[in-house]
Length: 290
Image (cartoon, rainbow, N blue to C red; front, top):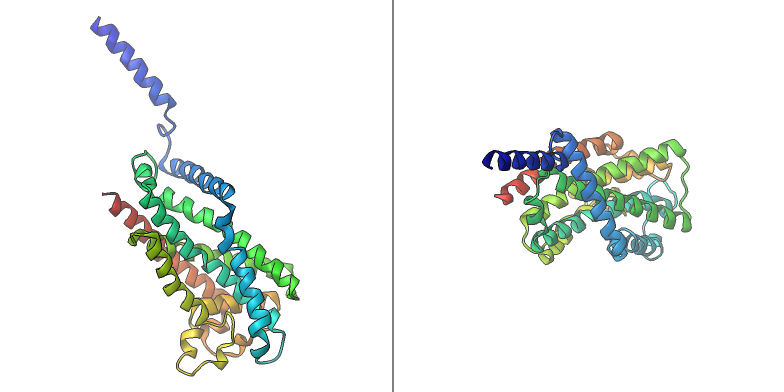
């Protein structure tokens, strides 16, 4: 009787092991599977709540229209050129960077509702939870970039640098936006409420955008502020996009290294942020798990 029961239990254990998709899978394969499942979850949530896309659709459109028609007439471009054409390169970077505070709020909200704790109780990769979050945000950034481009075309912005260079500009912008999202994940891991995360995002990320050449040339800033703006990663992204789009780019006359090599500077900034914030975010996640 005991032997029969033992044999039955053994067969049942083997059946469960065969049904468990995590058995006989490499860590990398499991990581990819977890990322895919969690990314689909985030996308499904966006489909159910499309208003969550307002920060990458409505807000950029409002900023483009306000700067183009309210402030544009008072802003001169060194070397000449249309402010409408000048604006879009900087607005593209701002619209992508604005997803970082949203990421922080989403991470804090998931922690407050206990969703992160449920993920921790499952046999899934720790890094997959955060990676899926950033990939889902990258997809929303693609939508935001398209929204900025469309409203830019509506106000007279045109690409004159060729399709290949334009594709490179969008790729650089999305790379930078994705790296910036990991900073938002770290912020969300260290804060305790969605309200604080929203306020912190405003305090940290908004000055980073405005103390740059995203909306105004750095030549018109006070002398002590110009080096800060010139070495701001947002200025590098704006200069890279304007140069590749073939739009007015006063930063090309500035002798700071990031303004003379904006494409390389964007890659360096993005790589630095990924190397710092991605491992830090995973470390914070694992630390909080214990």
